[in-house]
Amino acid sequence: GQNIDQPTEMTATEGAIVQINCTYQTSGFNGLFWYQQHAGEAPTFLSYNVLDGLEEKGRFSSFLSRSKGYSYLLLKELQMKDSASYLCAVMNRDDKIIFGKGTRLHILP
Amino acid sequence: DTEVTQTPKHLVMGMTNKKSLKCEQHMGHRAMYWYKQKAKKPPELMFVYSYEKLSINESVPSRFSPECPNSSLLNLHLHALQPEDSALYLCASGELKGQGYGELFFGEGSRLTVL
Image (tube, rainbow over all chains, first blue to last red; front, side, top):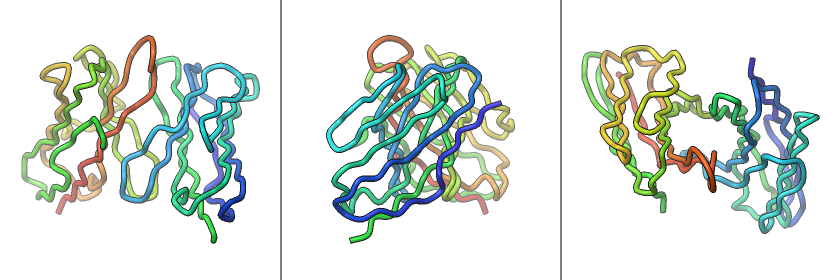
């Protein structure tokens, strides 16, 4: 079966750092994605990890450990516009991209 | 601006109607996807087309019928839907191999209401 777990909600303060964790169990692994989705809008791509390690892109970084079935998304210097849902998604061996339930991130001033 | 265009943005239909959702991309991607998303839920995969052929059907009811007329277009034909089919329908495209493999580009979605 396929299982992707991430926290349902998180709250952080403007200017701070937040880490959103994701664990997964899938039939094969061809990569892990993080997407941002604002309410009522389509998901937008943030990052892609297929090898172990940290990928940094501006204020956002994503980490992957394939042996642990674990990833995290790190957001630095939080801004109010970062309030959104963050979706962890995994591509399995059949090239299906399966989404986790998403983490709603609330940013407080 | 999204490079995947979906029409219509909003659709209201009765349970006996026949309608279609359309999706277009001009990025040369060889994979196109339909996802269904209910409020506060993640997108759920419905169909995947690879090289214009249906490669994945996630046991979607036959009242949803996908069609890929060419490499840039993807349609979703709707017939005899139920109120519980009301949702945001997202089209996405992506590469199958090489650079950019796996990343999905989403359209803005078509919000469907079935009365």
